[in-house]
Image 1: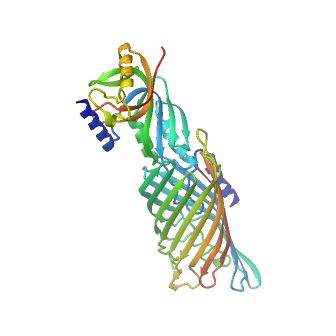
Image 2: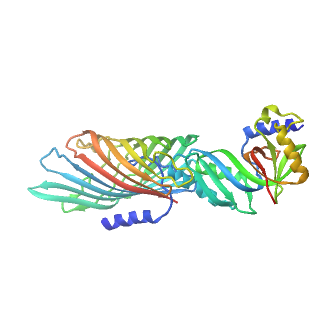
Image 3: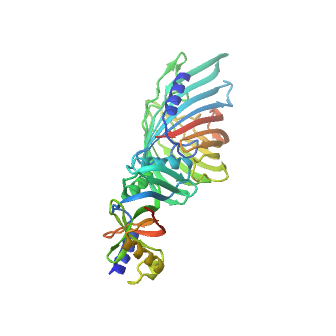
Length: 297
Length: 184
C-alpha cells in the first residue's frame, strides 16, 4: 500500500504546472481552462470507532486519491477520480482480536461539469455549474478472507454502476472564496447488496491571511485559512430488506490551510464530526485527516 | 461622412468586439482581464499567451488584472488571437491597450496611425471626441490635431499608446493616451 501510494503521489508531483482553486474536501469546484489539465492528489486517513457493541470494532482507512480534471471547452470539464484504498477493520471475535483488511484500487468516478453561468469583475469571478457522471465498479467487491466474504464496509468497491448528479456555485475574489456544491449518487446495487444512495453537501470558504497586499508585477503567492462544512447523508443499504445498521447523516467541520503559488497548491485539512446521526450499530467517525497538492499543465 | 462612419464604428464595437483581425507592428500589448482572482490564474492566462508567435516578454499585474506583453521585433499582432486566448481560459477580456510606432496619415479625412513596416492603420481619437466630434475637429482636441497635422506633413515617426476598439468595416480605432515623437 505504502509503495503504491508513494508512486501515485510521486507521479502527481513530477508533473509541472499551476494549481487550481476550490475547497479541500470536494473536487468538483475545480475549474480548468480549455485544454488545461489539473492534477490533484490527496492522502487521507479516516479513523472510525465508538463501537456501540461489545465487539470493540475500530476501522482505519488510508486513501490516496488522484483526480485528473481536463478542460474540454472553455465551460466544460471532464473529471476522473481514482482512489487507492487500504482498509483495516479490527474487531473481537471469540475473545480473539481479528483484523479484516483490503487494499487496492477503489471505484473510479467519471463525470462532466458544465458551467452555465459566469460573471467576472476585476479580481473576482462568480460561477455556477451542473455536473453529471458515473461511479464505475472498478474496486474489488467480492474479496474474502479466512472469516469469509469481507463485510460491505471493508470492500473496495460496490460492484455497481452508479449515476451521480450535482450543482456547484463558487464566488472567488483575491481575498476570499465561498463555494457550495450538492451531489446526489444513486446506488444501483450488485449481486445481493445495494448500498444506500449518497447525498453530499459541501460548503467551503477561505480567506487570504497572507500577504496583506496582492502582488503586482511579481509572482503571486497566498496563504489561505479554510473552513468547510461537509455533510454526508446515506440511505440504508438493501439486501432483501433494508439493513438496519447502515445509513445516516454526518456533518463535518473541516478547518484547513492552503498555500498557493502560480504553479502549485499545497493543502491540509482535518475533518471532525459535529453532527452524527447513524443508524443501528454503525461505527462513528473519529476524524479524517487530509493532505494534498494540486498542479496544472 | 466621417462622423457617420465613426458613429457606426462605435455602435458596431459595442455589438461585436470579435472577429476582425488587426495586423500591426506593435511594440507592447496590455490586456485588462476580469476574473483573475487567484495566484494560479496568472499561470492559466499566461500559458496560452506565451504560445502566440508575437509574444516576447510577459508580465502580469495580478492585483490590477493586467497582462503586459512585449512584442517580438518584426512580429505582427493579431488582436483576434488575444480575444480567443482569453476566452478559452474562461476569463473576460475588458480592454486591449497597444503601444505602436508609425507615422500619421489620413483615412477618409481622419488622422490615422500608419504603423511602421506593416502599414496597419489605427483611427486616432480622444475619448471626448464621442461628444465633441465635428467635421472640422475629428479628434476632439484642436491642439492635438495641429500636432498630428504637423507630424503628418513632416512624416515624423511617433509612438502612440492607447486602448483599441475594433470596428466592422473600419480600421481599428485607438484612444490616444500618450503620443510621443520618436527620435530617429
